[in-house]
Amino acid sequence: MANDMLISKRVQAIPPSGIRRFFDIAATMTDVISLGIGEPDFITPPRLRQAGTNSIERGETKYTSNAGTIELRRALSDHLAKRYRVRYDPNEELVITVGVSEALTCAMLALIDPGDEVIIPEPCFVAYKPSVMLAGGVPVVVPTRVENDFKVTGLDIERAVTPRTKAILIGYPNNPTGAVMTRDRLLEVARVAEEHNLLVFSDEIYDRLVYGIEHVCFASLSDMRDRTILLGGFSKDYAMTGWRVGYAAASAEILAAINKVHQYVIMSAPTMGQAAALEGLRHAEEDVQAMVREYDQRRQTMVSGFNAIGLPTFEPRGAFYAFPDIRSTGLTSEEFVERLLVEEHVAVIPGNAFGACGEGFVRAVYAASMANIEEALTRIERFVKSCR
Image 1: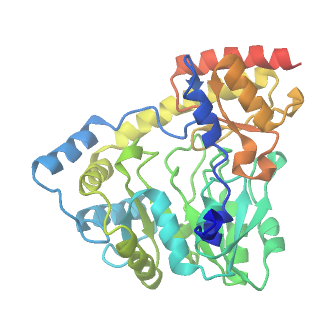
Image 2: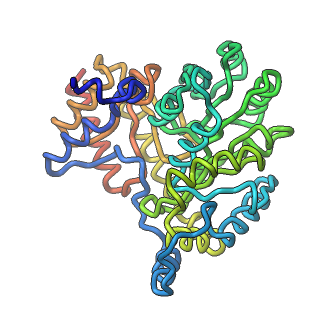
């Protein structure tokens, strides 16, 4: 039997990640400064690590409820109500997942039928389109532009709606651009969703990492709660990537469908990770704020550095990514990234890994030490001068 006959057509249709090749090259080198991995360089705060350790020492090493511990769901319900004034019933409207990636996959499998179209603004997180395709859906891309600070408009989405459109998938603060949507822009999206009776998947994993601007929870907008699947987690805001704890929040009917997929695919999120997440919600506010302040300083250094080098960079107001325009070098995104890695040992990610409209840009992560950011900027400036 030919190998291609063994693999499902859905999986064959999904291209490999546009990121991995450059990490494979970097792994063979020394003295590489990585601005490529979308992960906090902070370790999980001590009190959260201790809570996870205590959970293990108490012998809490078995499955939890499929939906997660009731203590964590209650605390999360209170947290969302306090921050965004949107309340979810911890018994019926919240499920704890293995990171937000699992939450997204389960939500797609639960709600998208073959042939359903899902509108996705680009550039976007690399898993968005594959998650739709694995559910049998059809991703419909809506490009965003640097001229609009990579914020999608209601008109952009309206033009993409067809009779087969089932949902909109948005992710703000955005990976890879760092864009943050204003309330007015989100209201434009809400109007389109209501007019065409669409679901909205809102990935808000970076909700706490915003700088000098408000993060607006999409589900908190008028009449949006019951058509929104709110996706979030603890990986980025609490520096808990390896603990794998996320969540989905939705109306009871929708959440029951998501939980049905979750219980067959995963069973439950890691028990000790849930204990650490609970401690984070209860006692880690100062830790989160300290990380946000540090990210903000790094953000300003990186953005001003790129602009000084001659790589125009709009101001990212969320997450921990800068998205400089490298078109003046005459190189494609992939050429720029590969040559920068080989010649100067700095790792960034080509913008087209996040969609075709990311071509001409690269993603650089400022979740790195200030010393590494400054040294990387020095190397990048030298590289750009050599290109010109």
